[in-house]
Image: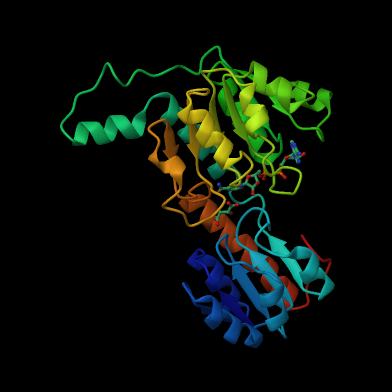
Length: 312
Ligand code: NAD
Ligand code: MLT
């Protein structure tokens, strides 16, 4: 049985699959046409977020039994089509939640305290204490959009900063939120009006793309700082750019973008944006967990130890 790995995963995962008798080929940075040429030789494929596992690729994968995403979510995989073709789709959803929650806090603090600007101006020989005035998290209201695994971790961490936590998540009952000391708000508009900070933690779906757009940003406080460490486009990029340039909101921390990799995004030209290149899951700990979890699931499916269920 042959497994193709197209993006870097932790070596322990590779070793685990080889010990179980699988042939594992790591071919990183393949051109799309090279991938299409060789995919037919493989029984399994492991990707992270860059490889697009679409219809064309799945149609070229004649022997494919399972596609694994060594991370959280499967939005770069056409899961519906894969399942139609009897290809199992798996991911490692719990592997990187802590990493993503901690990165969210890092971005929030970096935006509040001008960390990148402070560092770069100091290195350029400037001592700009007066210009780089920050704001505190303490006694402010943070709105969490999507109170799932990561949203809950972010809430707990921000409560430790003395923040009031409110959330918009139509699928989580008020009582469950209350148990976490989070106040439920029923509409995104209400959340936009009352928050000093907003952070989004939803999956990317047709309902969540652009959930915070032009109209919603018009409702925001002038001091709003917003973080997106979930998926590019949940906060509409054009609307966000406009709101930041026009000074209608105060800042943004962004780890994810509509088109990735991206270096020419206009948001990256703004002083009140702190950005990272999709680093939310990039901790040693998360990558070990993601590599091992994905490898275990792939091996179990290929070796017939687990039944095919479609997705897991
Ligand atoms: P999760 O499935 O545990 O939680 C998502 C929450 O969003 C759920 O509670 C769900 O009810 C809620 N939700 C769904 N639709 C909604 C809507 N229309 N409005 C409001 N809430 C809605 O997911 P998670 O593990 O917490 O991950 C959250 C996001 O973070 C995902 O997009 C994931 O892909 C992303 N992520 C990014 C990185 C990174 O590297 N930046 C790493 C890990 C995860
Ligand atoms: C994510 O969910 O954003 C990914 O798991 C990131 C990654 O590729 O590690």
